[in-house]
Length: 250
Image 1 (cartoon, rainbow, N blue to C red):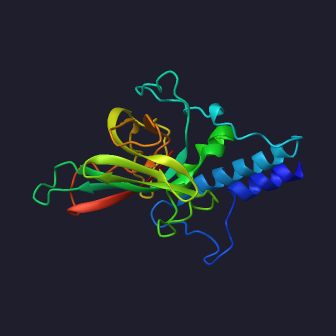
Image 2 (image 1 turned 90 degrees about the vertical axis):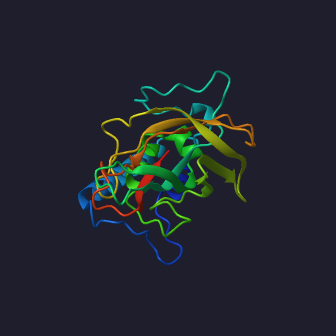
Image 3 (image 1 turned 90 degrees about the horizontal axis):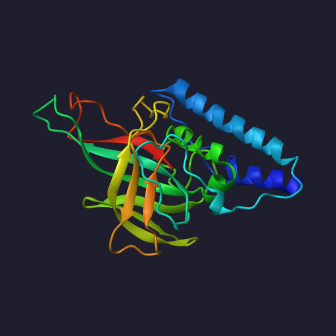
């Protein structure tokens, strides 16, 4: 029982081994939301640690138990016969451009960049905790690229755009899962309860992406769910020609 409690704490709570001891929480624009998200995250961890003390053996990290979150109206499920290969939390920016001569125009999407962190065991064992991570992580600074807020989740890859193609590179020294260029298959609006970003930006849409030629690791689909932040303002008024909006997602 002690082993399980220690393992859960070590896997999910604060990393404090090197300076700076704690990650940087950005509270300048949306401090109440940031603190609420962080409080909810740590309160849930505390309840998991207490519950783990009642178990006689440690739970198994069985990815077959990982499930999509509720509220995915409009996204087709994975095809029959597919299994979950990896679950990651991404933390990065959605990127946009604006027409300097038209303040009433809507910003145009210009790709995204994110660092991916290994959340597979959390997805299998504690899906309710997984859904708390993007709302918390979006409020932490991006300059600590090897950390995800106050978690100890290991980096498992990167997400970026190769031209207009979304690309996921999940080949790291720790994992060799694959490299996935993909295309948008379908999308769904984030639920009304989805977390906002650092400045109150709405959550970007949930997506199903399908793998394209050049994919390795036999990956077929990539889903973006549990989004937090990332949406641009309605118009380009007072916006620069290019800008980024902080976001996080599963």
